[in-house]
Image (cartoon, rainbow, N blue to C red; front, side, top):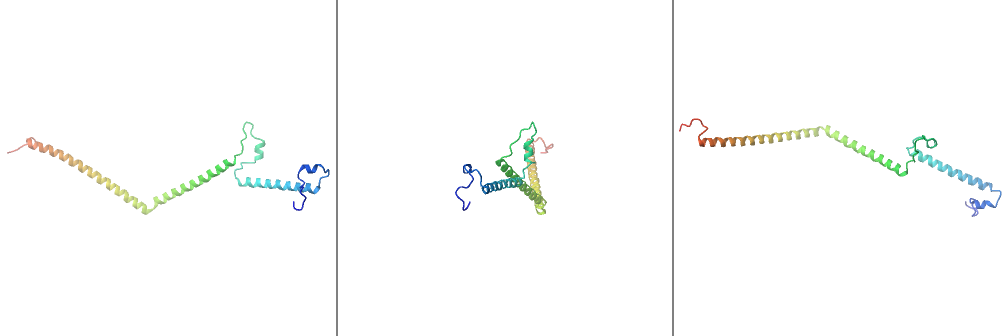
Length: 166
């Protein structure tokens, strides 16, 4: 490329007039083509190795598909990326869930927390018992008051107390 004439020897028009082709140019072009093909092959191999989604040999799959099966298109870039992202998110969610569960387990087995929980449960039970006692006392008081009124009425009319000596 450096120190050459502007004619590169690549376009077919330049070859039309000259019958004997320049051997060096042909070999140079061949070497360039081989190099670029090798580069492409290397890139493809590298990308296939890096994407761990190759399921078997692609060539054998394409040449003899099962007769009644429709050959599927390979997944597009977008789908591959979407699946990869979904996998990453699933891993992240699993990690979060595991952390939450292990924290909960630690919390349940912590003796100080267990003691606090026991105390809270006892206090709640005591509160409930106190409320029940209050309710029972109020009910008994109302009952006695009603009975008292009945007895008071009876005393006034002089019906209940069996023997009034006066």
